[in-house]
Image 1 (cartoon, rainbow, N blue to C red):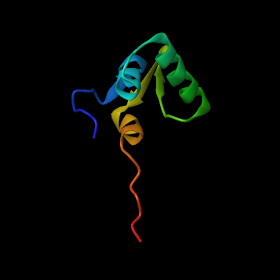
Image 2 (image 1 turned 180 degrees about the vertical axis):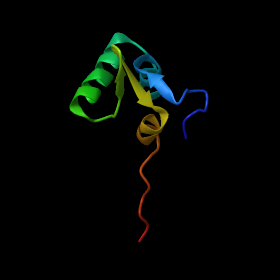
Image 3 (image 1 turned 30 degrees about the horizontal axis):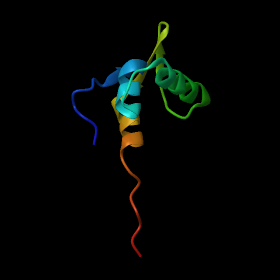
Image 4 (image 1 turned 90 degrees about the horizontal axis):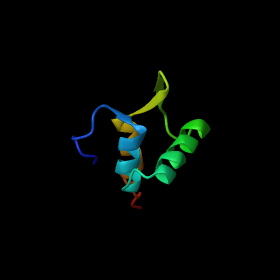
Length: 68
């Protein structure tokens, strides 16, 4: 579960910090590639991208294992 400290709409910097543990230029560039490829949903407002907290949480939540 993601921290409630993050706002509902996160900047690329905040998202990089949450997903990769740092907000280096390479981490932010990786996010821009994900956005351009449609791997993570983002809204562009002006010249900035914002990612909803729920979309970040999908990457932080481990997939559930089906027990047979």
